[in-house]
View 1 (cartoon, rainbow, N blue to C red):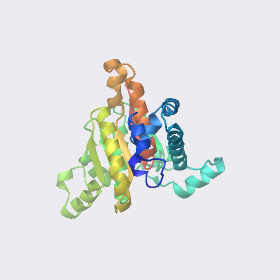
View 2 (tube, rainbow, N blue to C red):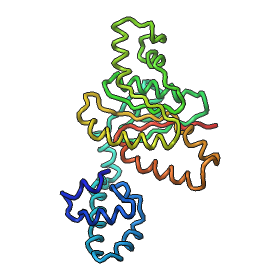
View 3 (cartoon, helix red, strand yellow):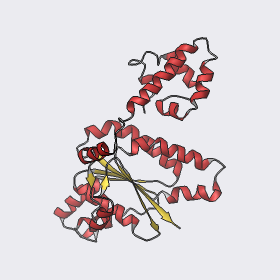
View 4 (tube, rainbow, N blue to C red):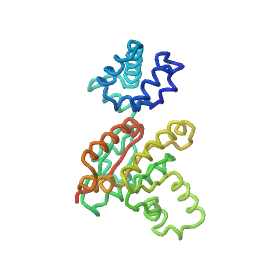
Length: 264
């Protein structure tokens, strides 16, 4: 979400004095504002000589946030909106597409749950190759070193041996692999840092790119949060992680967001 200093031209109440007040509470963006206790913020503003203007600035930020929300729709309107606006991408497997009501939907989160070695990563690799074949890009966050170009080659239908394909097939496969952007991620904090950077980059790139990013995959989220859930972190860290995760949900649902969860 926007930094406060980028709002001052359009919203005079978000002036330098208001920004200084917010900075004293470690609020530098609308995102920081949403995470802050509003009652405490209003109480703090009341202690300043320009309290009324500060309160007006807080109300202005609330109006900005409200304007970002989609309009309230009833059930029928939601169905019609989904038919008109929600693109669906096949996973490459008819059975899984049927279970998902057609496939992976842009604007929705899809969670794949199952025991280890049940094929969740294979579904993600197959989905990545299918989406990339349709000239869309995929961001793949690999937390367990499980991303395999050889499996992508197999799913594309060229060969199970990536190095043995002929020159024409190799070029086609390379084009598909170029659309699958893989990031190795080995702890939950690195994931949050990466999501933050992706949010900044994609806001500017997504309109300019010929191959828009349509699917965001985390394979798998369990390996990131299990060390914390098993008590290797301080008390309250799980709440902080989930709070950070929720912060990025509005960004994630710009795409079809898929993440894996493993039963141990």
